[in-house]
Image 1 (cartoon, rainbow, N blue to C red):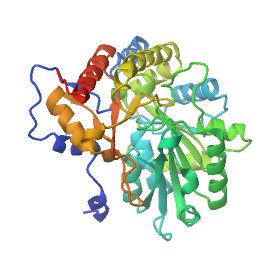
Image 2 (cartoon, rainbow, N blue to C red; image 1 turned 90 degrees about the vertical axis):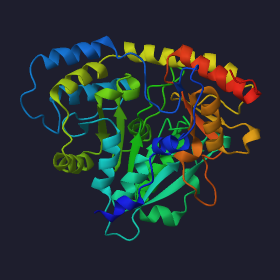
Image 3 (spheres, helix red, strand yellow; image 1 turned 120 degrees about the horizontal axis):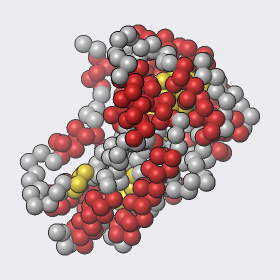
Image 4 (cartoon, one colour; image 1 turned 135 degrees about the horizontal axis):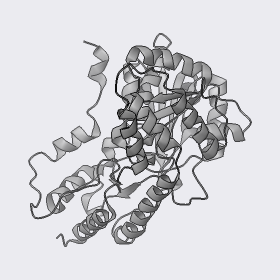
Length: 402
């Protein structure tokens, strides 16, 4: 058995299941789950139609890991429209089965475990795939805490130089999960300069890039930042997905783009890993990347939820709008003494509402857990359910649960 498997920690939702064990919430209250960031908006008809039409052609034949030119070209065209960058569809774009498997596989491709103390730098709190990918690749994670004073953006400037010297991969998540923080150009400049000096790869996780508030001010992307700074894409890869952008998490479709030499090695790894995307999914994905109308509507639905939920929660919780994404990163009430797990369990028991303890999404580093005392609320349910959940939470905190 691979001994590195023993180093993996339980996934946050397994910990949540254990936390709720034995709890009997009120049966009269319908369960509302704000714990998992699984989009629940209806899948756009154009994606369903493209999938149905492609399935009609049959499922004979193994798909190529490199993907169909149709899809790669659709992804490259989206990059031009969205970020104003020119990517070669043949060498700088590669379809993936969503962003999760790509984030994991990239670490296995990049990390050289024979080097002294190989390190992967990642935000804290973070998407747990970063940690698991690092550990199974034979590297040590270094956790970069978020800063409440900066709307919970990571403090990259506080990473010691000695850590950067042994770093082989840095995961960046902008907009961030769970905090929604967006990384500005100056911080990209700093990371690019560090990457150039020490030779590590930057993996820019941008799966929340299309969920934002102002249609005229989309979040900055990694490839776009490099272009604006006059840099090439050496040691830089961005990863994205249709799950959040198009509300199709079950499609398991995304792509990576960036450094052609890096993607050549990444393709080799994934060829052996068995990560080819089915032809029908590729056809549906190409249709999704080619349409923006459904994405604008998706953003409108999320803006509506924030607009209705925030006035309910702000009087009773420490909560503010994120820079982007569909999460609220809320402080637990003082009555719980900063115990986010106790708050989540009590809320579930009294109100049948699930939220995710922030400490489950972070690791203790330098003597503290930056997720402690906060909970993540994913506004993915229909607006009426989100509003009802917010009302139950406000009533619970105020001492008047339904």
